[in-house]
Image (cartoon, rainbow, N blue to C red; front, side, top):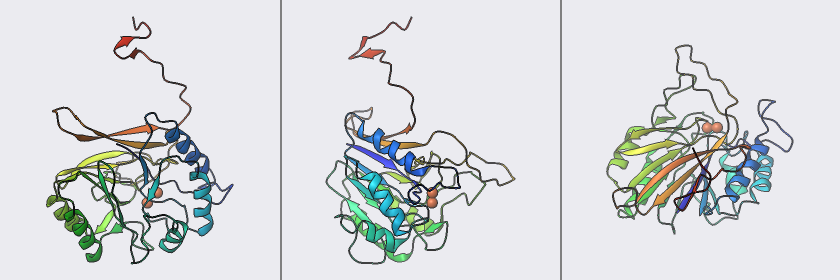
Length: 281
Ligand SMILES: [Fe+2]
Ligand SMILES: [Fe+2]
């Protein structure tokens, strides 16, 4: 099973540039092309939020015109830049969008790994949070399939990044309760998030937490006392989560990669089926 995670695409209106500089639509097109070119093909693509820069219906229409070329099925959860009502309307024709309820959480079944997709948005705020209703929903969903390897996805990382330019932890409410739920469900093989616009990982509540890189403008790794938040022209990227039947000790497991987006030229094979293709001497 191959799950591609994209996040923080920050799509503007057609022709618009984020911060007057970043063509986020072109970045998303590059991501779509890279995913479509994968061999073996991705089984599914999950967007972990901030699809749109300002969450307007026009931004979501623009997002969908770009993403319609994607060959793998797309699933998504909202981030702090998204608007729940516009987001729900934009994906009302999908079978994963909840038809009712306040929150846009859902479960992806039918693959080797189950994906429980959470809604961590607090409207009008940059950080996220979990209320009792969302925590109860997550606990219930995890309780339904205790033997199935599971990824928990949300927009806001529940663990510290060490980046001092904005709040280091993405969640301002419910993090402790979330950790307690995860500790009761050891089938959770990964908790995946976005929001930080650069990749990192940390142990959280007995599982591995992984934050995916943005497809558009990365934030610089600023960890000093000046608390600077800045954008940097590092390559955008996406994440590729591979479910391996043998992850090293004869048991299945999940491995998570990042794939930079850009024109790097074609791969230069050194070995094929264990045989040298070109001399490395
Ligand atoms: Fe973002
Ligand atoms: Fe965000």
